[in-house]
Image (cartoon, rainbow, N blue to C red; front, side, top):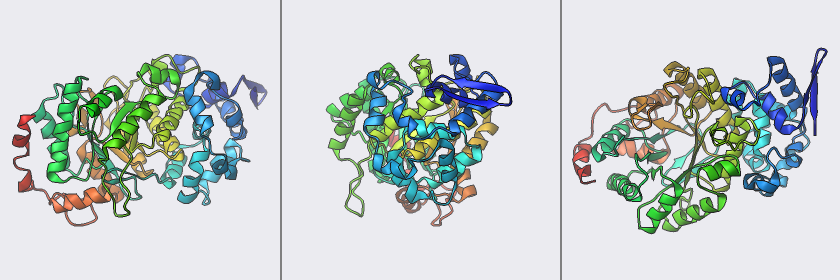
Length: 470
């Protein structure tokens, strides 16, 4: 189906929905690289106005990636909840934006609506939103998950403690881990990107993290961010696996480039669930959110599997993959892929808010790695702006990296101190179970203000020495 809109005497034509979405997308270097970007500001505005008039039901009838040869498209359409969609089924994209900004779109309504939305719908509405719209709407969306703690409750900000080391040195990892815990980081997950993907090394790191978590009774979970097949092998060998990690994308081809498909993710989830390592909560339910996914705008283009779509629409489709496997955590590593995809701080800022917005509307527990590579036209001031807006928008979790400088992956992220600043500035607190632990361990004051006690508790004095054996 063709779409068109006139500006003055000029009429702009868009051959199909895929083209319309791409031309309506705010400018970014990746879309320019792939040749799908609008040719001018005027064409972009025309596309956005035409997109605002598209009925939401159209997205159920016109696929941007063909149903017949893409299992992600089949997942999106085959699991669509028509009953949940019914309250907004008569809206256009523009009507939907207006409704989302209104008082009727509260947390209860948005939670009920999420199964009825497709990624293309939420990508479309994000393209006609201002930054403040993306913040306000996402803030209304609550997506809470549980394993050993509860992540994503209102008024809470969690962190992934990321103590990476370029040689996987146990003492180097332990130093970063201890530093993070003593600054109140780690309630979302203690997650290590291993320097090598050898299964034996993965198992060693898993045992090390499990020793710390169980030894101190920390209500958190561990993850070694290795390929899902390595995690499956580790489970087979009896390793203490809490969460299964995998990078995912928004097309079947992108996921194949990662060496995965939907069946493999389902197998991994069942394997992790079989270990029953999650806590049993007061309501008698065991924490069973066992998946951790990472995404990023541009991964499909990098793999040559974007199917002529803009990178933000494909990114939103990745969240439909995540949603299907009930993850504990999903985060967009927003500036990690590089300036070929998001050129500068302005583009990274917009992309991070879009990703968080789209994930939350789809019912996904979204966090964000607020980050950039050293060859991007961005700096820490840009990241401070994105970090503050995301935390205002209710982002579930951010990264906690020693000094904000990941010495293994060689990129700039957020520090333990950044999380403290956000918690104290915006009145946010860690996950409730982790907060209680911080207070019992005399790391935080026994208040609701996330304040450090400014001392190292004696019980942590021998932690580094104890971990030398790993």
